[in-house]
Image (cartoon, rainbow, N blue to C red; front, side):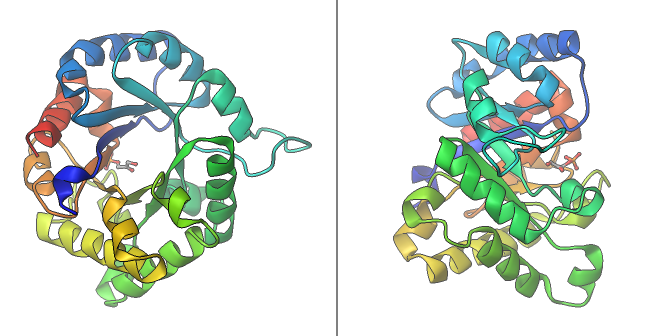
Length: 258
Ligand code: 13P
């Protein structure tokens, strides 16, 4: 299967930014710019929980999909401050970011909880965007592949082939997030290809070829075209640049170009 057969996905991860009026304004600006991507590139805005309802309303009837930035793994109960997959589905959310490095670094997220959240999301009908990536120290010690293989195996433990095809993998080298340091296109391609090879070992080649693998980490209007031209880089998970409509659109258009 060729890259052109996989779904290209550009997702903004807004992180802890934007009030509801600001969210509406940004989405209203993004919608007309990216309308031509319909049917070619999936465009998603992953927004804070408080913005979800606003985002779903603002994007209704457009080709912009809405994602959440986290989800809890239990269905309901005494989990103060948490949000369940069913709650997200009820609001109209389609995607959810799981295991972002900021959650792993600051909020005690582990591969075990990433695995539980991924399975809970899939069971509820959400499409997970599962984030993996090595620390700078791990890259310097030349164990990037071991780290990534471990994360992929643990995060997707017990996820069926059918479900993994609904899952997006985001390769986000931790040293490239919010630092302005981007992985070179060759570095991104190398690890995204390794992720696909790891999926082929766990599942099979056909399944691995069907999974969308994104790159994330200081992707911007300037470097996106080269990164997205790579065979195994099927899209991007965009932080800072997703908060500016024009920059986000430039990245979407680069993905449309392939
Ligand atoms: P930046 O694009 O701001 O580096 O963030 C990347 C990221 O963490 C997306 O999830």
